[in-house]
Length: 240
Length: 240
Image (cartoon, rainbow over all chains, first blue to last red; front, side):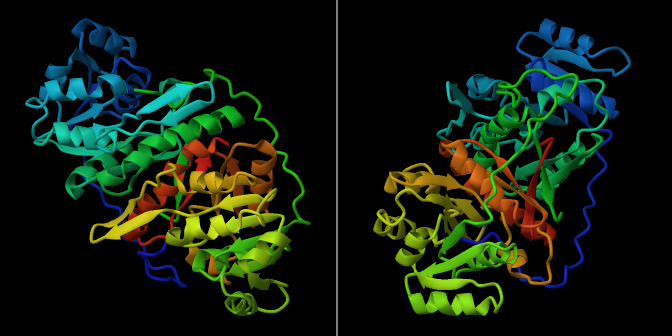
């Protein structure tokens, strides 16, 4: 079989770990497309609580404003239509339903030009046996985003978070790692740093976009874990 | 987007976790097809050190015997040709190279009838950008095994282990979770219990075989992690 270690040297003594220095992202404006959904609202809440400036986006500006208001005063979260959010943000998290993914992004190509786009969409189907992975023609939701947004800096991250935990105000820490994928190190570093603004989270670089499908699809497995163990499962990567 | 929690109830107060009682597997004989490779030899070593009776298999009985002898005296590991191993084992781990997977299993259909088969093969390709997932026609290596072995109890597990750590005699514990997939609970329970014989490991049920592809393919991401962080990455599932 193909070994996990094929690309690494044998290490009897652990080598010193490379520094995990990431940029300061505290001044970046983060937009969340699909910010009225559970995952989007949860991420908006967590990032805003961490001091990030956040704008929630929706097709309908009024719904976005209502969702932003619902997060409570003092966090400074605004709501706006998707195009405004895309224009006014430095980093744009895509948390729309999979069936609206292509249409939403196609319509925002100009507004998203030059922006760091963070796709966190999991294309899944459900039947009576539970969840299963859908395989987008482009390979993954993230690759679809990259194809539709040739002028954006597309990354993928935040797939494995429990929207229940994200939205639960009584939960202080979310102890999980965030796998971050992308082609350009400066962009993935920003996304890792953004993940690490949230207490308990770590951003871990986990490959190029061509390997995004399995990261998205793994949510089907975590749903099985959740069912079996009545859990809100997340992932930690060991030895990093 | 499709939320990770869609199949679980909201839980403001954590529900009591279901018991993780697993069967006693200490008396089962474990065969390892492809036991002369790094992953197979590593698994054989760990299971034998845990007190399991282990037989290493290879197309060539002499090579299997040599690999078994190489693990040292006192562990009681034997070597034999693949067919003998399949016949004499209760649980058979498939750790052959992906390109020999279909042929090896096709030839052992009768010997593997009724046995618990544990596929841990990761179909990957490599190019100058690193590793990428191959997509078997059947969906995954595990589904290919299930198609070729209709009379066996096929499961999938042990994908994300570092062969370097497995084989390093100075490493006492392997702190990682083993995702176990399969259609039949009695079989996946045995495989989980087997994983838990190894100090530090936990067996976690992670879905049906139709969701095996992403578990196999995720090794490509862990290889990226290993490169970036000079690590021997593994996974832990949180909240279980």
